[in-house]
Image (cartoon, rainbow, N blue to C red; front, side, top):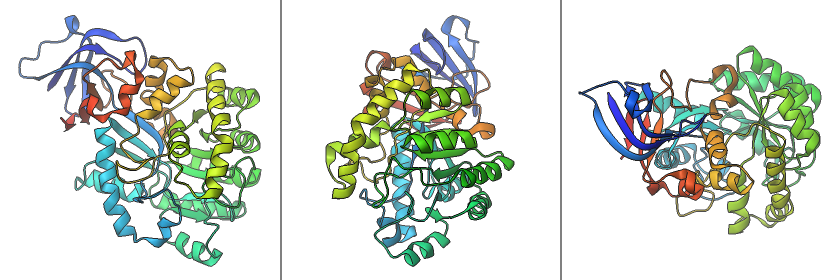
Length: 408
């Protein structure tokens, strides 16, 4: 057993506990609460800490193994090269305190298997497999001849083009065959795709319904990439579990998300990192600059309307020297703080809310409670005083996954 003795425990959901103890018994938490009530375990390894809290959940990120924010790299570089790079991203995630990732398209299905086999150390990965997109949609590579993109999509790694309800149903089944844990569909245009508009809905109601139906039969939920209002409302009507980004969200959309019991994953980090770095192609930079302030206002509006929010970053790049790279995940908490979230609310979005984005497959994780997974982190500072400390992986001095210490 391990006994973590902390000046403050932040349980993920609920009030902080001063002078606290967390006991882990193998892969689960045996006790979490005031030190005065902790059971006596003389054989436990004692770990002192300033703060202890659940491991972070990044509910929207990509293991692409690319070195630049250029989607064409996924068809120009060997999959083996990208997968090798991505193992460094797994390590960077853990060092940043991220113990669980809902991977929204990329190499995550294969990486999750390697982690489970024990050959690679990394967070828990709940992967979507290929991103599902209409021809010409956000998941298409508009600068390449369509046959090239279709040939790449046949490999089933990163993207899958589909048109019509039957084709989308088949595309979902292909991801289920790969053991994807969540399904990702592009309901609107995006920033990095060249010829579409983020405000436009790009998948029909019938296509969305087919995706949700087939996924639901396998207890999988659907995550819908949505910037524009039409796509948001259509996706909610179809029954998706999460809205990703939500840039043009208004009061009607916010109320609909809340009333449907859905979750918003806003991904402030990617927009902020990219607009600051100016590394995008000119067409994408123009799109980004047009929406970044609108997106910030939408996140604040969602908070005001009581929308459930989960942390997601949309990071995808390998190499900590790069903008929008793995290891920078903790910046999202401070950005949520900038949108009006209290420190406790931001931490809840980054911990306890994470499993909610998986629906029926949600693990008992994200909270410091007896019987929950022993995925937790320790810090050398109280993060409630300044959420920016999450941006510095060095402030996260210990990381445990399933009770095993993987950092520190």
